[in-house]
Length: 188
Image 1: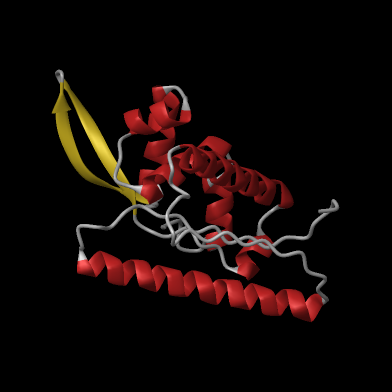
Image 2: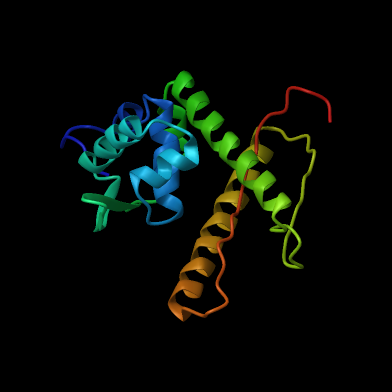
């Protein structure tokens, strides 16, 4: 993503995600090449709002135009994300707490919605589906070590996806990996 030459990535992220809908819109472009019309339908949002936020993302270099198609006298534009939205730990800490909460809420809302939809459609029936949940008591060093393990697992998962993309096998299906670690405030 681009910004002004003297702007830090954290400042740019803060500006880019000031509006929560923009985070949802970008997440749709990260999942697949799609259009503002399809995103608006998927998010049950007004097309003009999704189009506006799409233009902000395009201007900032977070997405790119992939193609256009003529549809009933109009032109439909299709975009995809051009940069993975992986926020490093030091960048996360530098974001304002309010923005971290907005981004976390959008992330969790998406995970819940997509996993419930997958459950209803049989997407969790595959033998390769994996669900794990652990309740841990960690000191500061343990939290740092766990974060490193999760970053490594996520990196390895992206490498596996890249290799799968290169094989271009006919049996490829969209999969989702959710990695979360957080301080609980309630009892299990």
